[in-house]
Figure 1 (cartoon, helix red, strand yellow):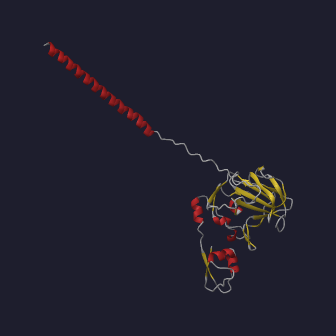
Figure 2 (cartoon, one colour):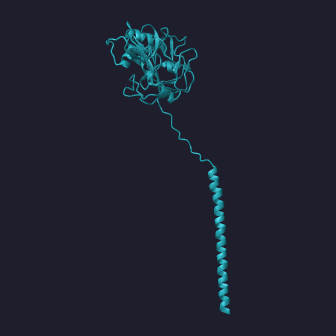
Figure 3 (cartoon, helix red, strand yellow):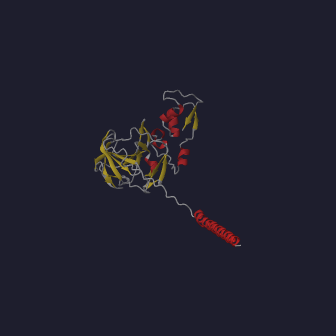
Amino acid sequence: MTVFALLFVVFQSFAQNDGYIASKMIQANKEIEILEKVVVGEFSKTPIVIAPVVIPEKDYIAENWITTRFNPYENTLLEYPFKLTFKDSVFASPILRKKVVTSHFGWRRGRAHKGIDIDLYTGDKVLAMMGGKVRYVKWHYGHGNIVVIRHYNGLETVYAHLSKQLVQVNDSVKKGQIIGKGGISGNARGSHLHLEVRFQGTCINPEYLFDFGPENKIRASEIWVNKKWSQAYTQNSRRQADIYICHTLEEAQTMATPEITYHIIKRGDTLSSISHKYQVSIPNLCKSNHITTKTMLRVGQKIAIH
């Protein structure tokens, strides 16, 4: 009787322990379930914020900084289209009188005119259009006395035919600061300011970027530049080019595909008369049609006009 009683007590103890363990396991599973709902649920509701990658602004001032060479980008090939950015909405007029453009960017007297000419009197003050750093101050063939300023967005402005240079290389200049005086030095027909705008050594038509009217407006804060803007032979120096601004890469890529017009040769037509009619340079006509200036034009021949 004593043995059976002892066994009963032992079995009862194991049963109670099993029940205790089972209840604890159930309680733990419930706690884990509640914890998963709280933690996982809360995390799923909380958006994961990833810090943006900050790309440092390119230091155009330091790039190819050579003060002894007019074009330090001689071996650089630009890829079009590319984007230019401007922090200001206006620029400083390069002269203090009304701006009269006497010759535009384009083909002129059988040569490429890669800037614009602004009328002035010898001795007139010439001002920096934007802030930047003076990279080149010398006499340069054709340009005469020049000042080249590199700006913080990578553009360089060239001020040529000066009678006097009033800054030195490595000088920091502010927008509207006097940098020289106008004149007739170099290859100039009468006193005027020859103004060029360059990016990595390539000239761009300044009138695509800057409105030289009385308000001195920069045409947009972001401008996509296509290849045509730097091709003087496709433009006419006697008039301002048709201005169109590309605000996006897609616009620039669309505009990069030129529309083609065809002219049917009639009796008496010459390359000169076709060039004048469509305001397209003779070299452009020749290049587009794979002909030369000595090619005989035939009546009924189709000429492509880009």
